Amino acid sequence: MLAAADMGAMMGFKAAEDPVERYKSVVAFTQPRPELSAEALEGVIARSGGPEEAVAAVSRHVAQYGRLSAPEAQATVEAAVRGVQGSGAQAAAVSAALAATPTGEVQLSDPVMLNPWARLVFAALLNGAVGGCIWQIAVLGEAERQQESAIVCLAVVAVLSLLGVLVLAMGYKNVTIKGGAAG
Image (cartoon, rainbow, N blue to C red; front, top):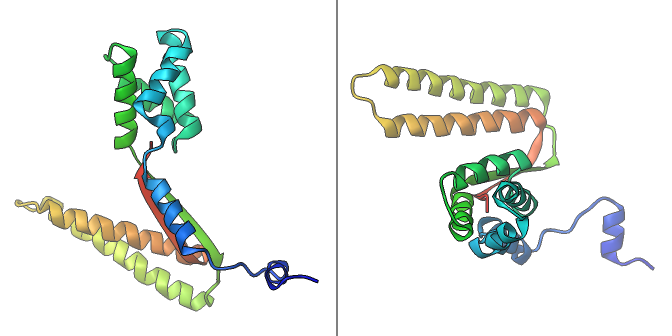
């Protein structure tokens, strides 16, 4: 005899996410990883065999345990160790660079299509918002007294409107946006 949860899974239903597990995943995403601490990176540098291999070894380690791709990790590590002498100082520089490197993740789930006319109307409104923001940024940018805060706010509204257009076009109901450091 099947349990209710098994029958629900067979029918395509999924249980609501546990709030405690959700909190742990959000906190884990924003916390620095111990594998990318200065001490751990110093061990990777010591095992690498030499200064030439150290950058490649640390880059592979960062790509494996961090949120950066291999080319991004390579560029970040090379920039961080440029001009820094000593394995401890290099490890600290890479760890600090990873902590300062922002990353983001967007999760789209529960595809639900609106009626085509509703998607078109909402997308047109959000496109109008993007166009209006771009026009206002251009007008403010030519003014004698530039207001940076207004330009930044308009840019944020434009990006959020563009994200709304993309979500509408793809038809997703739930969007989760996470951000944090690369390390």
